[in-house]
Image 1 (tube, rainbow over the protein chains, first blue to last red):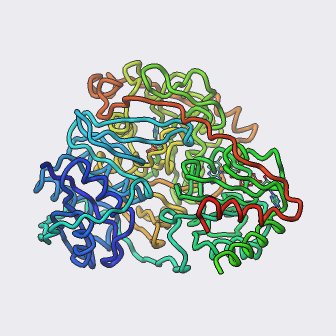
Image 2 (tube, rainbow over the protein chains, first blue to last red):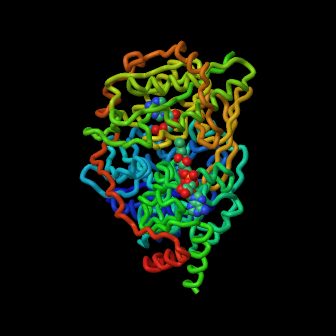
Length: 320
Length: 262
Ligand SMILES: Cc1cc2nc3c(=O)[nH]c(=O)nc-3n(C[C@H](O)[C@H](O)[C@H](O)COP(=O)(O)OP(=O)(O)OC[C@H]3O[C@@H](n4cnc5c(N)ncnc54)[C@H](O)[C@@H]3O)c2cc1C
Ligand SMILES: Nc1ncnc2c1ncn2[C@@H]1O[C@H](COP(=O)(O)O)[C@@H](O)[C@H]1O
């Protein structure tokens, strides 16, 4: 069976969930061969094997952390040359997309970004995308070279599928461009202890209606009662009430959870672009005419300062 | 020596309009008004700020690849303060994908001459956000992308990239390709004077022949991806909307419990 390269997103050996979802999709079109780079690369093997990786190609070098994007492109290109895969799958993070795009240019292949589903097709893998702020669903394929496809988080279930997962060292020679952009310092984002926004099953978001940084405690309390991630509209972020890393929408994160709860958010097209594919959508807004209500499965017209705390209490009571 | 800045701007259908696909499954650009992609205004703004802060003189060229109407986007950028414009326009470009567009932009950037290319973080129609990285690959220069802060001094570009797991400080020597996010600072509005001045600024038109590009490598036929179908997402079935009469939170909790979220 044809091999499919899967680029591994991990933090010091801890594999992030979107990569495991990629393994599920990769198994639909061939045998997954994982590529893990940087510190902790080898430590990813056990988890990857459990989810279907027949092989794990690893490489570590200071260049991966010290320079932007290109060293990883060099490594993925080396893996592509070694394996001659039927497709290359990469998680749709900002960096993942850039790595994938540069690889595609080098191997003279077409690229599809932000797929939300993937299936085998007669002429190669067919990717589903959601476009124009999720108003349309398209199906596309790549007509030249090795399909390079980036896939959004929450696009497939994580499935156990034990495979060999044999670790093999990947030999990488860095290109002249590899050291072009130096990372002179790196400040890790502080952990909040809450689930990752793009990976969470439930997202609770607040907008301009939350009316102040201190009031976000109300949104956080609801999120914590549900084990959810916290999101924010751009209006709330621009006002300085919540970090930009939590922004949902066109210029923030795109989320696709089982449940999205929007409070004090009007539902502008750019916000919808980042949450419209959520399975169930719930909103609290005091304006019955707010466009967000066009999207909801359940909506409460009311003051979020009344409704949200009551909801949080009730969730706690029901959960015991 | 003066600093030569090229800003890549895209003309896109208005996101608040009713965007559709044409019969050949390309983006329908006829039915919806177009405009300068809002995210590229940030690129123009940073170019202007870099020019204002430069020790030597600097010159800003705005560049677009797009249909006749795309001139509107160039005019807007010129009225914000860019110095001149280049418009690559050719009927054979219809349906070009990111690989083709990046090829054309790379040639046009080289033809124009550059020390620094600045792009937006993503176009508001395609939203791939990969073109700047591809452009850097094609030009063989450093990519310093997705910056929420940028500065240029002494032939070095520095910036802050707020990534998923960390915030990074980046540094590269010019020439380089930069892209900036909407966190980089509000874009200025064109002044009346700026709008008047823009009318007199030069806009150079180039076609594929001028850039020595084979028509077969671009357009719908030359694309390396193929859209097989596009269907309108079924409207979400109307949900239940209740008015809070004091029990709204409890009612919502009951719904969530019924849906097995609690
Ligand atoms: C290029 C571009 C990119 C953008 N990207 C994004 C993006 O990524 N994400 C994003 O979110 N936006 C984005 N925007 C901005 C977007 O257009 C909207 O301006 C923004 O989403 C509005 O945020 P909001 O809904 O919180 O605020 P508003 O539109 O002001 O809505 C606030 C809502 O809160 C309600 N409200 C007020 N008080 C209460 C209360 N006490 N109880 C209940 N409800 C209350 C109001 O009725 C109102 O509906 C972008 C815009 C542009 C031009
Ligand atoms: N046709 C085009 N003409 C000029 N610049 C473009 C064009 N398409 C994309 N760009 C630039 O590339 C950036 C990213 O676009 P994209 O990868 O298509 O999302 C945009 O913000 C623009 O700066």
